[in-house]
Structure formats: structure tokens, C-alpha cells
Length: 116
Image (cartoon, rainbow, N blue to C red; front, side, top):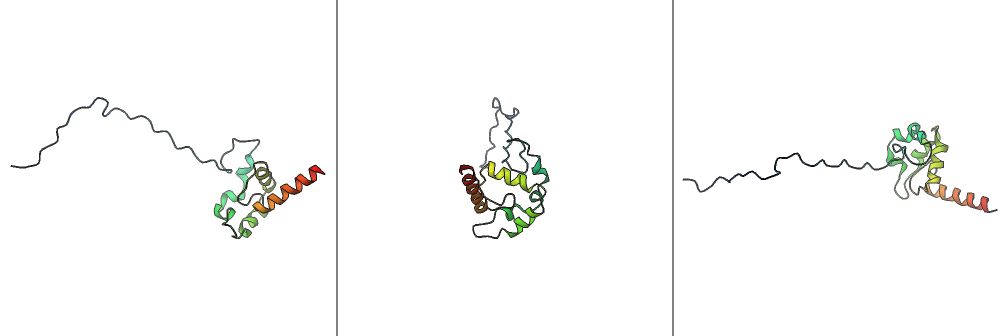
């Protein structure tokens, strides 16, 4: 005779009902795919950077920005990209062909020019 017994199965109310729907994950906004914020953002669909490795546009501190800037130099929406970065105070990455430091310098120049 076996020492193992079979578990007793019982019907539990609600068991087997259709489970509640699991909410879909909220996508992380991307400047290349999220076209909802301010103004006409259709320029993002034409951005060359959307077709390349995004890591090149967000180098580690002290890393080279040369490859990203090379892509930007041939991009037809470079001005729109830079305008977006300045308007949204983007503090990381290469936008419109400029690094964070270069955009900061440009902002300071614009403030100085406006206050003069």
C-alpha cells in the first residue's frame, strides 16, 4: 500500500473564471516615436539618428561625440532637432549636432544677447 495520498480537489468559487486583464506596459517616451508633445514633431520621422545606434548619441562621460556629430552633419532635420533640445532643456546626448556643453554655451549666448 502506498503512503502517498492523492490531494483532494474542490471547486473554489471564482477559480477558472477569466482573469482580469493585465494593463499593457506604458511605453517609455522617445523623441523619435512620441509625436504628441509640443508643436509639429514630424521632423523626428526624418531624423538620421533614428536609423543608427543610439549609444553613439549618448556617449559616456569623456567619450567621443565624433560619430554622432558626423551623422548629424548629414541630417536634414538638424535645426529642428537642436530647437527641440533647447526648448525641452535636454541635458544629455547629442542633439542637432551639439553636445550638452555646446548647447549650454549656446543658451548662455542667447541669454546674454537677449539681456543686452
